[in-house]
Length: 415
View 1 (cartoon, rainbow, N blue to C red):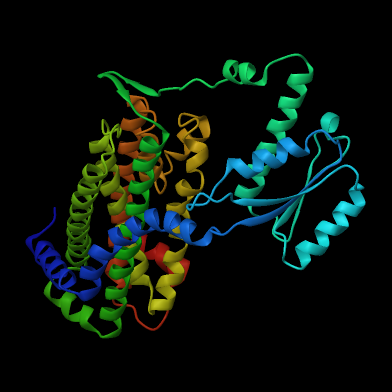
View 2 (view 1 turned 135 degrees about the vertical axis):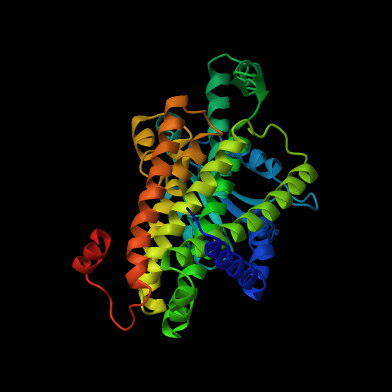
């Protein structure tokens, strides 16, 4: 049973932390950074991508594709002022492949040519085409030219086979596939970005909240130990009350953070006109979110009372970021089969349960037994962690100057 003194400590922790400049700045800076990261890539692309014409050499060793490739390249892409993106220098089959290659390399090294596309005489059968440039990492440019050359070769083959390339293109036109999410409450139009996006945002928010709040908790405990303030606090309340008070105070800070972020998120979604977000399991995602925060808060409390310096605390807590970042690493794979045995198994690892279930819920709702079992396991894990943390906290909070050994920690837990 949590005593009144624990709530007094929680109130003190909350009031003291909520007034700090770092918390206030982080409260607004975090969503601003997340919004910035979603906008910056497109802004960078507009500024990084060259807006002037690109000089391109096209060599055709087959003797039949040059005009079509040159015309297609010239008209396929234009600059904002309607000028062709590519200025093409055509080289015909009267020039040998080696001579064309040497001429292209000389101009590329002199930086008067961005790239060269060399079509050998065997390209109609082998489909092997060479792209030469100083920068072969320009995927967008390479993909454009590859698509154009492939299309010209295909059209040539169709024409000489007695088929109309335009008619064949119409017959091969791709269908417009509309994705509809089937749920027990009815069908809802939704897509990959909506399902994956809400999971990704929740996981990132959980990671930021745990790391920022956890580091704040650990730092405060290390400072209180080094300043001997903790001895005054323990003289006024029990170590257990102090521990629970710190966890509750930080949880209240987390609720304030999350509430503001949710409001900002709702405003942005409404302003952008995004529809089809899978919100059926939103309440479950919030439950996993806060249970995950409580689990990690208990671990941070335990690490904080064992550390004597901030460097030790950062070293101890640094490994926790691995568990927090793992779902982000496997997210793209997980969305393809969220009910795979491996992902289901990871969902029952307590440190991974919150983020793994948050990842799976919007994509494909897990069976009820998995939700119930994972929640039960998570609650049990929180109880065990808090129990162990209370045992360690009782002695470790007063320990300064030395790091306890593993045998000593085990002895504290058994006592």
